[in-house]
Length: 392
Ligand code: TTP
Ligand code: MG
Image (cartoon, rainbow, N blue to C red; front, side):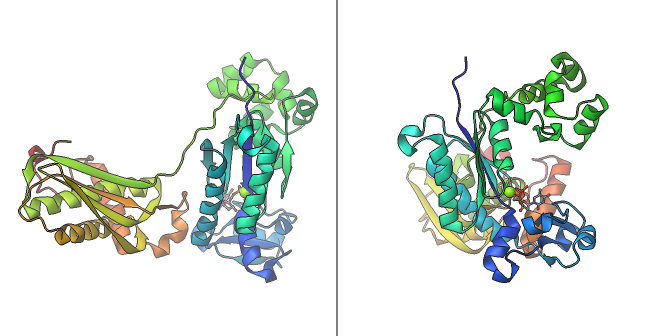
């Protein structure tokens, strides 16, 4: 028998719109639609006032304008929203490291066993909401349950500014059974249609259908869906804490004092780090150079850039400058590394800040695309380094 878990799900209310309403009193209590041309003309989100007109995320702005011509339409200011997003995440981590961040405004926390430190799980949920409000002046909705499915359902049911508990009891399940089957995790548009064709409309319908039938149609996902329809969900909260830094280092086969080799190595490292950062959606501001000499003494030097970047040449330039400032005094180098810290993450919203993308970052993307086409190690900018020189 599995021990009872205490899972909290927190999701900000109308996130982008609420931030804008907070910062612009003239938008308060008005139908506010955030979206814009950069998002190919779709609604990113709408204030709760605007939702009354049937406006929702992903809807073409043209359609929204027909539904609510007097609504206020404003563009996305992603950098601002990401700053709030970071504050919210920091609050989650004050309560437990077992935090699974989803997108830019929600997260699951497994607070099982945290009672002694912070009080009951319900109190923890209340404290998180309170702390978010204190620190950002924004409301969120929290749900508490024995698993992720019920916790998320709970936070959803209480929106906006709710705090809802759903335990796996007959009384709760009786309510859950009445909900449309699309409330179940994994049931998107296509699955929903397929379930409907089997006569399954509500969560209760799904629960009453023999599991074999669902599995035959949907495989493993079917098993999970069917379990959820009965309030069971064994998915763990998978902590995905943000990286504090992204770096690479290499050890040479023979100790090196040739500045041109060191320079090419820095370029190679910059290329690898830049690719990694870009893929994970990070930009960074602090560049650290690490050097280990032949006698194993190790030093590091750091510098702070003016702008956040993932550009290869931004990283390379900074690292090279740091290297040149070190008095090598004919000492040979055994290991060299670069790391980038003070990271910020765009959470898949990089496109919104595209116009702020530097030339270097665009170049990084181009180089990344080309080198992937030719094979990861075939095309590096730093061909001068012989692979014999590197030990890693
Ligand atoms: P959500 O949490 O899905 O929506 P929300 O916070 O606006 O509203 P709710 O109260 O229902 O939670 O998404 C968080 C933010 O992500 C949202 O404010 C805008 C952005 N977003 C998009 O840009 N496009 C989308 O299609 C969705 C769903 C969200
Ligand atoms: Mg939200």
